[in-house]
Image (cartoon, rainbow, N blue to C red):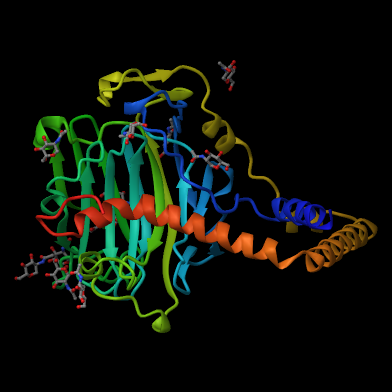
Length: 377
Ligand SMILES: *[C@@H]1O[C@H](CO)[C@@H](O)[C@H](O)[C@H]1NC(C)=O
Ligand SMILES: *[C@@H]1O[C@H](CO)[C@@H](O)[C@H](O)[C@H]1NC(C)=O
Ligand SMILES: *[C@@H]1O[C@H](CO)[C@@H](O)[C@H](O)[C@H]1NC(C)=O
Ligand SMILES: *[C@@H]1O[C@H](CO)[C@@H](O)[C@H](O)[C@H]1NC(C)=O
Ligand SMILES: *[C@@H]1O[C@H](CO)[C@@H](O)[C@H](O)[C@H]1NC(C)=O
Ligand SMILES: *[C@@H]1O[C@H](CO)[C@@H](O)[C@H](O)[C@H]1NC(C)=O
Ligand SMILES: *[C@@H]1O[C@H](CO)[C@@H](O)[C@H](O)[C@H]1NC(C)=O
Ligand SMILES: *[C@@H]1O[C@H](CO)[C@@H](O)[C@H](O)[C@H]1NC(C)=O
Ligand SMILES: *[C@@H]1O[C@H](CO)[C@@H](O)[C@H](O)[C@H]1NC(C)=O
Ligand SMILES: *[C@@H]1O[C@H](CO)[C@@H](O)[C@H](O)[C@H]1NC(C)=O
Ligand SMILES: *[C@@H]1O[C@H](CO)[C@@H](O)[C@H](O)[C@H]1NC(C)=O
């Protein structure tokens, strides 16, 4: 089958060239409702510097595509309807600190987000609306409980929004869309703290979250992404929450992330739910070496460019001929492929986007419906 062969060839070429896996669907095993695989522990602290390197194989690209720049790091861009590029860590942290340096995207209806989320839907959020240049929002959820989500979503002025009370040269402007800002979340068994540019803006104590029942307390993955919450197809409340309808013609809209410093307060190989309570006391840490830690402690692989430059002239020609040949073969094969395949691919991409919208937007949708209508839509 020429289709299968050329797709295989292209797939191989892509897997050589791209460090990230393409369009993932989201794992949806809720440990409160059955047995799920254990969560890979980060078990260390690590700074992902997106100006130096791409996130590599400790992250999954779950939607869209990310580009990289040595000055502004990872760029998450919405070019058109349906775009919502997002990366998600493969590792989990079980309490810890996350410091993300981000320049939020501009634009009505565009949401730049930093999300910690667990398998049983504990969640800690930063959500920055593109059209709001003075305030940032944050929120939390325990076990997916969306009751009173609107009351929990809180807006805070950027420190220094009024003038000279921010003498910080690293954060030159107080607008989230202007320059990079330090969004730090500190998460322990006792309390959650949200900081912007070194200022503590919100504290949540365990007991103040529905007596602890709604306190995020299970191992979380980190997700960085941009979402067009103000897409005209979304419900009015979501659109209003996001500052209005997205005007795709005024795009592209880009969220930039320079770095993410992640500290895991727990250690071990994996974190496993011991029962179906979702309490932190029920989480078992499986002893052993964390695969994420091992991956991260390896010296960075030489980039393809460096490997290529390390070759002799003959070797270079050989590689070039091989790559070009393979590409020509693959493209020729693909050309021969029927349109059905292409349509199928498009459908798969649409499905992946739909899955993204469903999973990521679900809570946004809830919270944007206003204080009354919390029925799931
Ligand atoms: C638990 O499983 C049941 C049956 O499969 C399903 O209907 C329900 O939505 C699940 N609940 C959660 C929280 O995943
Ligand atoms: C965490 O980072 C600090 C530097 O900030 C380093 O000294 C320390 O060894 C790290 N801890 C672990 C467990 O990697
Ligand atoms: C990341 O992507 C891989 C490959 O598709 C998938 O098997 C895995 O479940 C994903 N990992 C996480 C932690 O989401
Ligand atoms: C930004 O958010 C704050 C708090 O919700 C609100 O008072 C303000 O009007 C918003 N600004 C814009 C431009 O939407
Ligand atoms: C969900 O949250 C609400 C408000 O915080 C609380 O009253 C309710 O008991 C919670 N539900 C569960 C199942 O914990
Ligand atoms: C800026 O001034 C307004 C009105 O005086 C005040 O409500 C707000 O808290 C101030 N913001 C900061 C960051 O100090
Ligand atoms: C910023 O600098 C001014 C003038 O030097 C000083 O009065 C003020 O206390 C400083 N603010 C902070 C937060 O350091
Ligand atoms: C400036 O910002 C950095 C990074 O957020 C922080 O470590 C430092 O304490 C801040 N300094 C001031 C004076 O706010
Ligand atoms: C970012 O903010 C956190 C919390 O205030 C602080 O601990 C950290 O040092 C800041 N990062 C930098 C690079 O200044
Ligand atoms: C949303 O707004 C449109 C136009 O203003 C209106 O026709 C529609 O009924 C609204 N839908 C809801 C669910 O409020
Ligand atoms: C963990 O790694 C260390 C070396 O880094 C090794 O000595 C040890 O045997 C490993 N432990 C396990 C359980 O694999």
